[in-house]
Length: 141
Length: 214
Ligand SMILES: [Cu+2]
Image (cartoon, rainbow over all chains, first blue to last red; front, side, top):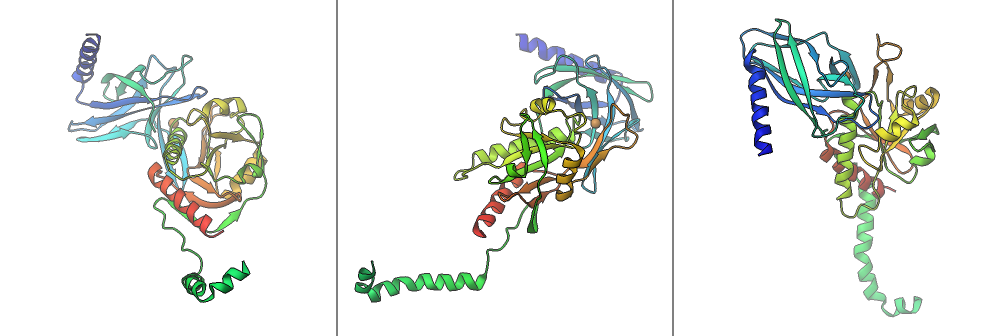
């Protein structure tokens, strides 16, 4: 019963999330971090079925002090992270935030987040639209 | 002994012929061929490493001596890195778990995470970060001079990212995983992307080749 209720709430949530925007967010997750870690990362797939590009400009979360848009890249064998002012999702295209690529980067909160926890995010786009979503904390490579 | 050989003289000669043939063939073919690797690159010849002084996550000295008599995978990173470093460390945990299931493997390789951010990566921080990925993993850090002593020998590059704030900086670092042999010599390098299955298989092939050429 509890589980069904939860599922209902979750699906209602995802309906809400797409109600005011054409953009779709899939598979949002936060990587569980080791106990002493100062930083955490979150990942998701952003799909834009619309006919014009959408630009993600800001992400907020009540669980974190701040959320940064980042990108990891390996250039000539050297891994580096760079701050991104925004992330563009092309019309009828998608952008995957994934390990070793685009990601959200957050300072670790005081109370450690562990697998099974859920975290809220609010995504803001250049046209002023926002999307609210929940991400699971997972242990993954 | 001598007596018994004399007694069976002609018979034991027959027995020895195949062995002699095998020996001749082996000599003709030379040493075994280096293995074909699917992910790693084997160095044409192992590169001996000279001594360095780091401290492990238990606060104990970690030097060249600790590389002897063990195969060692080493990865260079920093604990403030939430994306590339945990990805590689989790991947190495998967390699280790695959090797744990490998029958007939007498000894597992050791896995060493060497900090390229000794300024912030204290022994205390490493002691919580590194064993999270596998209880046997070792974290090591040292002063700039000793860190460079090791990284320069292994072709590992690192440095604070340009434009970073003094207290909240990012560190650029080589993403490769290095394999050292039980002589403490640099044997193979694994560039990105890393696949745990392929790395575990490559490791076994390199180990077999090493043992066959000793
Ligand atoms: Cu980042």
